[in-house]
Length: 235
Image 1 (tube, helix red, strand yellow):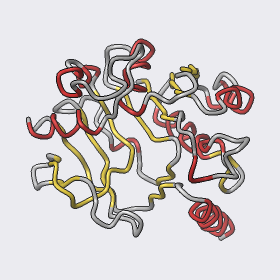
Image 2 (image 1 turned 90 degrees about the vertical axis):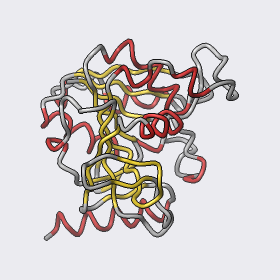
Image 3 (image 1 turned 90 degrees about the horizontal axis):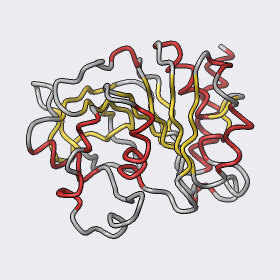
Image 4 (image 1 turned 135 degrees about the vertical axis):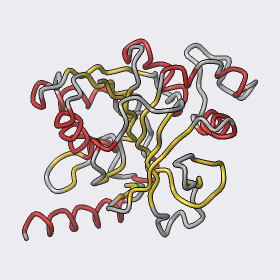
């Protein structure tokens, strides 16, 4: 199985920490955020990981190498000076991800979700991990019903962890329409409209993770996560 890690964001809310370090390379408990993902992916049996990059793209390979440290093979997919958003980033990475379902993770989150709980073959087009709403996002994103289907109604928060079939992106132009950036090569567009369109077709499943999850969107959240992980390691 292969995986994609979204690591192309500009990290603007994390300045000045991200002036010289891309957000996924910021360290918590002694190692970069993205390294926590790589460890868990390797433990799952993933063998290849695509990392999309933009801001400070040249920092990733010196920090992570070719992935052999984790028993992985890393591919760096540069998006240019302006990130392609999540949808465009996934579309740009598809040639490296192959034809089988793949895992996609936001590079700027930390979560103790057991990736082994993800289906290798989702019933629909994608399978999402949802979490309880954090204080900075109280309304949530989507609703999970008793059958395990995800709906476009705010209730829980999308964790940034999911499994996708490559077919999920088929016909993306019809969903995105003439949104700014969609006419570019490679195109720039968000993933959320495609997810919502597939939800209306009942083709997105999900799971509610009740454990720990942090969207590392501010220096304060980074510091709090670092302290929590260090305390957990100490005892």
